[in-house]
Image (cartoon, rainbow, N blue to C red; front, side):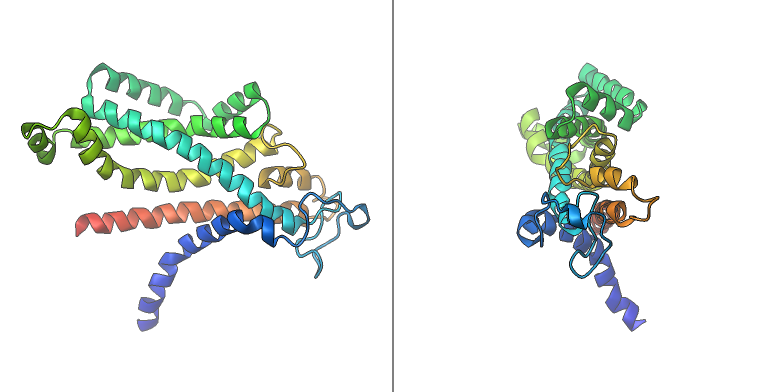
Amino acid sequence: MLSSTRGRPIADRLPLLLLGSFVLLALIGPWVTPFDPLATDAARALSPPSARNWFGTDHVGRDVFSRTIAAARVDLGIAAAAVLLAAVPGTLLGAAAGFHGGWADGLLGRVSEVMLAIPLFLLAMAVAAVMGPSVSSLILATALVNLPFYMRLSRTEAARRRSAPYVEAARIGGSGEGRILRLLLLPEILPVVAVQSSVNLGWAMMNAAGLSFLGLGIRPPTPEWGLMVAEGARFVASGAWWVAAFPGLALMLAILGCNLSGDRLREWLALRGRE
């Protein structure tokens, strides 16, 4: 009983530690990689994991460990930029529409429903295909498919609170609609948006990796987890499993860290709301 009580706080922190580890790698990765992620060595092509190359080498002799670490900055950077680009306008538009109601609220609701009715990855593929493979198209495509989540979430939260007693008291006290939205409603909506952002960060990484896997995102030789899996998949049948396995594992753990961190944040907010 005592051991489980002591262990629980550590278990609760594991998701944040996992996500934090990838964030740290993204920040310091270029300075801790043992080899240049772009340097090739034909003589060591498809070498298995060893003391020299912990994750082995790929088909042109590049160190998979160094490329996996370097890819953390690329994937997390794209995902974070896409989530931010979706969360800020999506939250502001949704909160304003939900608070004021009327035709704008109805229009935004219909737009969100239509966007969410379309398979989101197909929509991202279409946007990326039109814009061409690049970092900017990857960010915009991923942001676009994340946008309706924030519009719908903030719209619902604002509509639920627009007739709350403290909002009515602020109106009676002479506060304008914009002031009430900015100072009273948005601070209450933002924690819910933070939970959504944590989950969407993992989805954005998976979306970006999927587009790169299909040739619609990052272009070689830039290290990116989805692209590395695509390049390595060709050699799995010949026994060089490590080329695709390690970047795929890194992607899976990063997404898991985002999802579990979102769950922990949601639980913390629920406990805080009951206090």
